[in-house]
Amino acid sequence: MWRKTLNSLLKDPTGNVVVQALRYAVSGGVAFVADFLLLYVLTDCAHVHYLLSAILSFCVGLLITYLLSVYWIFDKRRFDSRVPEIIIFVLIGLVGLLITALFMWLFTDLLQIHYLLSKVLTTLVSTVWNFLAKKFMLFSDRKGR
Image (cartoon, rainbow, N blue to C red; front, side):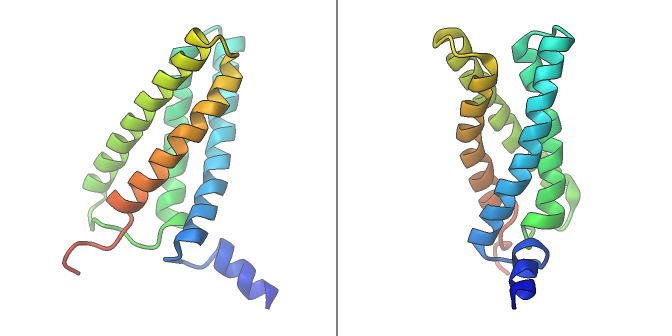
């Protein structure tokens, strides 16, 4: 019984939005750890400006999220071809990147919050955008099917 429940949560394809949101949270956690660690290493160790570090680390997180979205989180795909899917995914990511840059600047420069705490707060904002946009623009039923 518990094995079947665990499989449905972690392994089996699902259209259940709650399970998808939980999987997105897990994948987002993995992407966030990679993003956060790279931000720290680039900023504190390589002495790259925190905004450039945030952009580069965000891109790594975006790649992780794409791969997990396609292969683990969502069971439906709006497009048969990967080309439009990747283009729209990148556009959603660019909006997420703008949100990230804006809120990192707002929290760090204007509110004088440490850049790592700013990253945590910014991630909360951008995660909501990213999940909803991906769910409804990319990983939902195709129109007319």
